[in-house]
Every structure is written in structure tokens, then in C-alpha cells.
Figure (tube, rainbow, N blue to C red):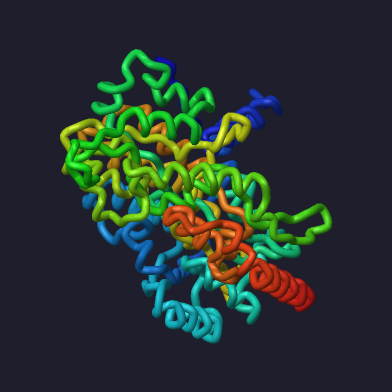
Amino acid sequence: MKRFFILMMALCILVASIASCNGGGSNTETTDTTTTNNVETQDPELLLFPNKDLGGEEINVLMSTEMQQYCYAEEYGVNLISDAVYESYLAIEEKYNVDFLLDFESSQGKNTARFNLKIQNGISAGKAGYDLIMGQMHSVGLALNGCYRNLAKTEYLNLDADYYYQSINDSATIEGQLYAVAGAYNMDKVSMSIVCFFNKSLHESIFSGTEYEDLYDLVEDKKWTYETLDKMTLAVQSENGDGEWNEQDRYGLIGVGTGVAALVGSGVVAVTKNADEEYSISFYNDHLTTVYSAYSNLFAKDYIKVDGTYDQEVIFTSGNSLFYSSHVNRLGVMNGSVSFKIGVLPFPMYNEAQNEYRTHVNRSEMIFVPMNADLEISCTIMEYMNYLFLKDVVPAYWDQSMTSRFAADPIDAEMLELSRASVFEDFGITYTSMLDYFYAAAGQNLMTGVELTGWWNGIESTISAKLGGLVTNYKELATLNY
């Protein structure tokens, strides 16, 4: 069986740094002190992130409570993830001589206004306010009130590094302005990514000796597609003869949030930007109608059940579904409730011509730097924090998710990392709260069989107007020299 390993860019950067240092040659007649200093500067992490004494500066962070379990720990010895988080904060405090102070507030639903008010009050407090904010993307609207720093062109962030999510940050940038950043510190991009779990025992019993015998090879060969999913679910399904589909029958696929994951996974892009930075709605086109029709036909089958909630997870955990499309964080939950080995795959591409997997994330936490913060200090902390979370916290998350003997194959950890590295958003998803959540609505419609063309004709003009208004507001914001 073929195996391939997904290497983190952080490691590549470190190796490149070493090569760069070695390429310049060295003076063999230096004193002991100079030699010691040279050895220290050969440390690739120090080259990327030099030590700096910030004199005991307090780093005040406002974080949504929804992220607290993944991004904060106040003691050591709890579990793998918490320990990695704790050690990351400690490493930052020691490296820069700072102290973290975290404030937590829910940033979703009815509490959004309270979260945003804390941001505004923090700005009014001047130096006593927040240095970093971890909240949901809909809080980006405060940028229009001058609440955030523009991070698009700062010299303090390496936004091309692998510890940032380039597609999200690119789509978040309007008119050279970036007020919300996504990086490895945004652990929602890990925990809330939608992947395809599969029942290894059921898979082996049905597909051993067939072209679908090794699903990991299919992923590697870019043959894990809608067509493959369609054929496999048909081959595995079985109704017990009572004429009624329920937990006693065998499904091909159950899922949560599967509609949007299918659209994103199939490369459907909602909004495009041309070379002149002009935006247009590109959602409704031949590719969308093809993908929508194909998945609508699949989701309408009796042996497919994707319009539900976690309550339907028992269909998979009882062994009665081959595939289960759901959030990564369900792996840890299921580990203690199954009698078979769980495999992990990214969500399938639509076809082989697509050439890359794309993963949808069902949350939108971002990092903001408020206007009153010291840009250099906030960015210095943000940069190292994202690096450490990719290097230490994300692997710890995979390790803890895979601790059960039912999910212990290292290739599944590679699949999880591939899915994380394939996280993708376009403008229409990043700014979904300002565009009436139309992409999410399309995903919901896909799962419930709503006809596409009539629905889109009814909302297109409204969405186009909202897009135009959003871009216009950012153009005006760009003139204010915030």
C-alpha cells in the first residue's frame, strides 16, 4: 500500500533557514564567544523569531468562549492539547518577557453585540485595552468604525507562511486592507473542518479486491471524487426488507453540514476579483449547476441521509453507514462508542480535473488587532503564536483524536493534516454575514432538494447590491488612513 507524508511548511522554513545560514560560509578563527553566538544564530527558530525583551508587557487577549477549550489552558497536566497550549503560551512569555491576560466572552448569536462592545470599550481604554482579539468574522464590520489595524502590508507578519491560511486571508483582503487574519491559532479551522469518516471494517468487507480497496491510494492519486462516492454508496447500501429506511438499514452516507462541504469541496467559488480588483458574483454558472444537480440526485437517495444533526451519528457508530461527513472534533467523541476502526478522508473533489481537495470549515473565528494596540508587539506575539500552534498544538490535537485503538493508523493523521492544509474560503464565504449567508443557504437547499435556479433568481440582485455596498465601504475606508 502506498503511503505519503504531508510535511508542514514550518519544517520547510526551518530547513531553508539552515541552508541559508550554511551557504554564507564561516570564520574558523573566531573567539569562543563569537563561536557561541554563531551556534545560537544557527538555531533556525531563532532566525525566524529572534528573542526580544518586552519588559514584562501584559498581552491582553479577548477570546470567544467557543475557542477557549482549544486555545487556552491555565494549568499543566490536563490532556495532550491543553498541555501543548499551556506550553505555547509559556514559551511566548519566556521568549518575549510578557504576561498573558485573557478575557472570555461568547461571540455568537445574541451575544455578538456584547462581544463587539467589549472591543469598542477596549479601544476607548487606550493602552489598557486589548492587544489581540479572537472573535468571529462578522465582527469585521467594526473596521468601518476604525476599530482595527490594517494588517495587509505590515512588515511584522509573514502571511505567506504555512501557519496562516492563505485562501482565507486573501479573500478577507479588500482594497489592500486586511483587518481579520486566520492562522493556526484559529483552532476552529482544525476542530470544525468537515471531513469524511469511514467504517474500515465495512469498507473491507465490501470492497476488498476491487478498485476501491485502498481509499488512501485513491486520495493520493486524486481519484477520491463525487463519482467514487456515488458508486461506493450505491454498492454498500442495503434495506432490510421492511420497506422503511431507519437505523436498522445500511446507509451509504450520513452527514452534518454536508451541503456546503460538497459545494466547497467541488471548487464552487461565489465571488471573484479581477486584476483591477473589481468584484463580481460568480456563483451561478455551469459548474455550480452541474455540481448542484449531481449532489442533489445523490442526496435524494434513500440510503443517503445528510440533512440531520449529531443525533444521527448513531447510524454510523452502530456500523450502519459506510461514510459519515462531519466535523473533525467528532472523531474524539466517537472513539469510545464504536466497535470498528474509523478511517479519515478529506471531502471528495468533484472530479479528477479539479486537482486539489478543498475543506469547508463551519466556523469563522479570526484574529484582529485593535486600533489602540502597539502594532509591532501584537504582530510579534501573533506571528510566534501561530507558528507554535502549527508546530505543537495541531499535532497534539491529531494525537489526542487518534488515541483510541479504533483510530490508530498514522495514515489517518496524515489525512487529517491534508484536510487542514486544504481549508479553503473564497470572498463569498469569508464575508458571508454581510452577504446574507447565501452560500450557506445554497448548501442547505442542496441537502433538502430546493430547486437552484428559481432560488438564485430571487436573491441575486440583493446579493449583488450588498457586495457592491461592502466594497464601496472599504474603498472609502481606504482613504481614511487608519
